[in-house]
Amino acid sequence: MSVTPEALLEACRTAGVTLVTAESCTGGMVSSALIDIAGSSDVVLGGVVAYSNGIKRDVLGVREETLKAHGAVSEETAIEMATGALARLGAEVAVGITGVAGPGGSGSKPEGMVCFAVTRRGGETRAETCQFGALGRNAVRAASRDQAFEMIRGLLD
Figure 1 (spheres, helix red, strand yellow):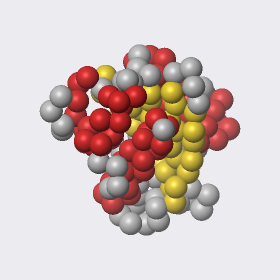
Figure 2 (cartoon, rainbow, N blue to C red):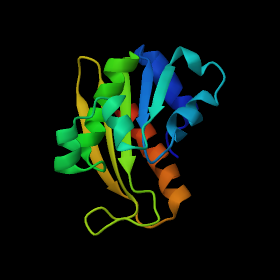
Figure 3 (cartoon, rainbow, N blue to C red):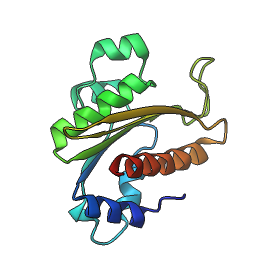
Figure 4 (cartoon, helix red, strand yellow):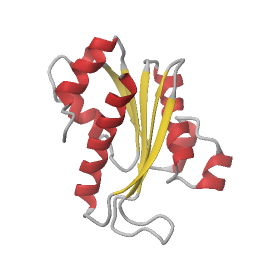
């Protein structure tokens, strides 16, 4: 992990931003790693673990049309997860993560495929898809957490 939780919290403090998360395949690993650090409550406001499409839709506001057209594992869904968390949980920065941790997957959405979005209130939104490969469930989730840290840090620059 090149961006540590401590470094990310400090970058958020320096930028004067608070952070919320919308996590699916990571199951809360991003927020958990951050709140393991004492004093993180000045940055981390909260998060939603949206494992089911129903939670993505009903809590985060992901549109049914997006889920039907692109699927739960897509940059479009990750963007709507992040923007939904920003709108509903309040903060300046949000991250959305959805993917296939494994085992399993399909031809177009194989194990290790994870979609990310980071957004800043009144600013830009960035999305990307990473193919971590069939590393195993826990390794994909950890790699996804680390990638989320990188993307959030990059948005603050």
